[in-house]
Image (cartoon, rainbow, N blue to C red; front, top):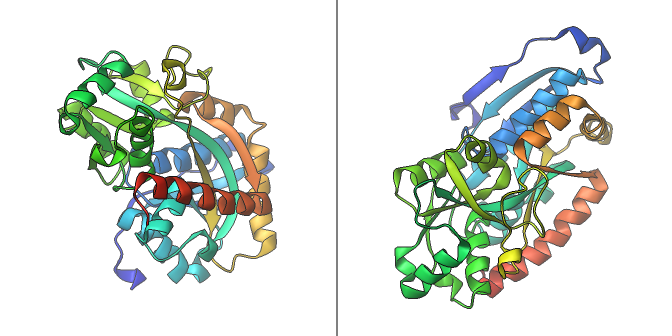
Length: 320
């Protein structure tokens, strides 16, 4: 079955002069979505930092989208014996999509290695959008919810959907009345925003920051508790009277059956990455928040989030 799966975006990075300092010979990053999304950016940014810092000799990348991330998870499980040096990037959606039954597996079917970053949600508009303030969105939504179209790079009931739904609920509206257009990846959702198919894009701050700095889009608000140093001019929903605060974690998983020694080796190299200049360059460029959680701590966090997210989804009507 695995042999029939097509791969895209494979890339190997050649050895550098400082590879002699390497802790790990090679890491292969498996990305469960297409190019341009948050998973892709996290994997490639992490690989870039590990390679440039000399902590890892060789990194490679493989994009395998489909099934809301389920295709890559199934592939990693089915080919576990051949994936000794593979790290699959994932985030809050692995919890959400397991709860909703988008795919039958959960994080318990993999080897959690480490949580690495947090990325606050962002609500993004085109530069020529009439929405200059979150209150403009609220006013339009009050008049006609169906005329306000939100886009996201994932399915209905996913994190990109939950964030605006929670914000709309906080304003006193029925979150189930929110019109959400689902795309298969963040890059496609951004294209949908720019083409006018949607009025707002729900995404991660890191995914929107570079385009906003280049003047291609405007970030209307973030779900951070306060303005972030990497986006000091972007207001938060909280400061505009809406108490929606949400951070999407991102982290890495190994195949089932990965040895404790390999898991700990990979967790350590990810932890040591934080002290490098190469990582700080990647982190600040993307507006990420350092949020390192090695193996056992990562598992405890995942269990806690499963409970918290499940409660929110039931409240919003996405789970019974």
